[in-house]
Length: 165
Length: 286
Ligand SMILES: Cc1cc2nc3c(=O)[nH]c(=O)nc-3n(C[C@H](O)[C@H](O)[C@H](O)COP(=O)(O)OP(=O)(O)OC[C@H]3O[C@@H](n4cnc5c(N)ncnc54)[C@H](O)[C@@H]3O)c2cc1C
Ligand code: FES
Ligand code: FES
Image 1 (cartoon, rainbow over the protein chains, first blue to last red):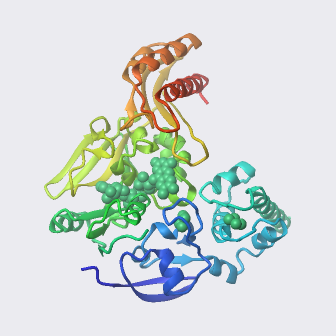
Image 2: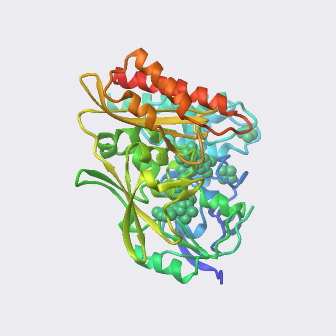
Image 3: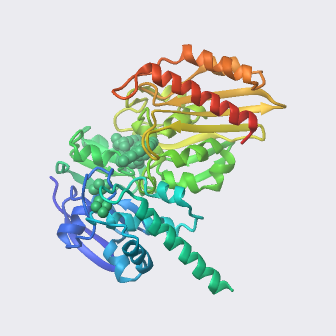
């Protein structure tokens, strides 16, 4: 029993066929099988948020699903978001606001931030906190992370208003 | 912290899933959102030989209105409940409770049926199914049956589901013009499991309570209806005096559990505070 199975999925826009053991989590598949180590693993039980990736454009925990479950889906990691320049402004704001120290939580924070910024909801500090409720950071005390996301939301809004005017 | 090796299959229909479970002789588990099962596998609290993935079955999907009920397909994800206009209109209590369920990323995968099947007494949706008097539709190789929420939750993580049965859908009676709802919970941090939580589904006319159902979460081994409190309020106006009396009744009716952080007395007190707040909101219609 428990032979490997073939899966086909898109990772950062590229279609990949792979042979995986059913018990391999998506996080381990990304990090070990295809060497995308931007996605981190901490608790491996859905609590810390270090492993967040986008599955069909929604943030999910890569430690809470098996790679076989992603068969036929589109996965995007922090590397993909970076390469297609979807979070340039967010990364710049993280840098400027000192929203990371050791960086362990950062990939997960960026994926959560991407998700809440893309939701189109009106954001204030409380709703940003809410969106980050599943992301642990042991270094920053969160304030600077909320600052960076708030700043990005404001700049994007201003940019849109200028486009409309 | 890695799951034991297992086989994996993605059946094409519910019937195929049910038969696969039977063939595995019980050494199998269904997986829907996986948001509770995967951690349990990683911690090796469970180690089935076969995972049967039901997350993509069309028969288990979707939200629709039919025959006086809102049908919630079992694999409807928490985020879909949260974002649905149908839910807001026809089952407003669920819309109120949904933001309290876990964190955004978990809501993107976790399913309504999975939450009921797991029957965590600290979970919001099982308690709301009780407050809404929902009907749970269950499939097995023998056929389909329906169980009222009041008969579904039996004990800690124990439900009316027999091994191998699948929840296919949940039916919630449609809200009317008289419906008023309230939900809240007390938790240490946003998104954490509640220390105590409650939801109310009521019908009010001219300021009087015609019907009221109240269910608490995180107070015992199952979600809990408080019939004596409901009876004490039915036919009355929600005056400050009526609310105080209801809180007193709750104090005697509720027999909450304690844990290392929360002795039973504290939980009872918090439940009373919560009930007062919720009834105040029903009266104010906010
Ligand atoms: C960090 C964290 C925080 C959380 N916080 C909360 C919270 O605050 N509130 C809350 O309510 N939940 C919370 N959850 C749990 C989450 O909501 C789960 O998604 C949900 O309880 C289970 O749904 P699932 O689809 O993920 O089920 P799965 O994990 O796939 O399955 C759970 C169990 O139910 C069975 N099952 C699933 N679907 C069916 C079906 N249709 N028929 C029969 N059996 C079925 C499975 O076999 C398994 O035994 C949290 C989870 C995590 C990891
Ligand atoms: S590693 Fe996935 S949430 Fe911690
Ligand atoms: S920067 Fe170190 S954990 Fe967040």
